[in-house]
Length: 178
Image 1 (tube, helix red, strand yellow):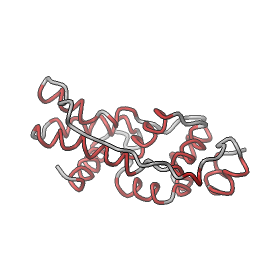
Image 2: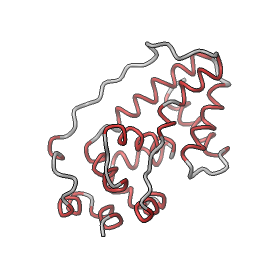
Image 3: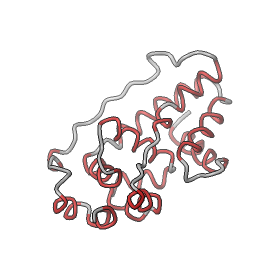
């Protein structure tokens, strides 16, 4: 499995989900689709997930997650990026490139208004769950490697600073801050 095939799998999972806006439903469908694939593709999918997480490990995106979710721990940032993967390639790439675009997503506006979090821990384990479903065994311990890049030091500021958030992420801050 390569990245193109992975994104096609997510698109198919989104089309089969009874509620494509529910990232957990999409993750469940992705797991079912992936578990029907050869073991080698399942293992390869795990590496792709972690490469996408590393690609999206960016301070501006973390600030956006902090705004939308009302906070963002290390695990919370992982789960937010899992949610983002389950939105599909177009949304993922657009938001990673320009996190303020998150303000344009109805799910983000609704989450901010309702005090809900955009997160999907299950997205991180899609390949692991698929491997268990397909083989009855855990993924091999060496099935993926990842290295997160350093976060941009220009974004090291207090995310509780509403004025700074408004300056850096104006549309998202307008949607999330009262």
